Length: 323
Image (cartoon, rainbow, N blue to C red):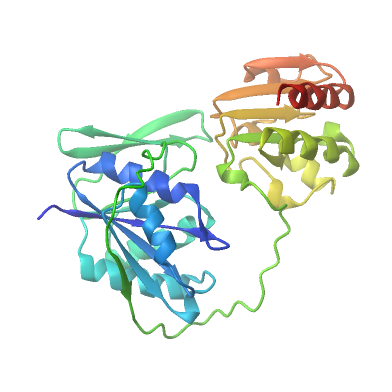
């Protein structure tokens, strides 16, 4: 029997996040001949989500359904995850490096007395050992790490490892697991999202980010329009958040979200090192700034020197004409 790798999926509003499929692809890289077992938690029917994981490469799925798993708590998800891990006795565990992943996986690693490689951007094989690449020093350098003994446990940075091709012909079992969830000390009574609806910022393929140069909350409106026509998400520098131009949930940088989209458009952002730590690994960076000496141009693939309030509306109109 082949060894198992558990992939802990994550959903939002009943829809699996793309990083769940990226984690399956990473699991295949860790041990190509392994059995990929998807793991889902929730309070509602998880059959459809389980089938989706199978279409993207999972061999079967274990779904833990309980009323106390309706929203994330470290106690609830931790109990459910540990129960599945003990039952499956996996070779490895993979999860997205998301807000939930960053909270849950260190707790699991501690209980398992296991190492944890966090925020991996790539996986390759050296013989039969998986070697993980992860950024260090705020993205200025990269290190390669491997786990030499025990469970291979890792979180994957969203938007770095492409998912496998979806195969609608794939089939597998979605097994419902029942268990008691006890001793929940945290009770979530309500969830209020301040972030805009639509594309999730950390997984968006296109990000339009505004800085202090946007000058006001109203100045962000053209950025939302540009994001809409490009099918992307809006982010911000800390300076823009500190100035109350937008909510801190949009902050990108060392103390905010880390994004690696295919296209990053920095609008009115000077390019402080703390901001660059959150976006410098984007595949293509476009900077729009009226200051030709702005630091953002040092990392940009394309730079536009000029008034953003003139340039952004022009971009919107040009893109609309191409669609």
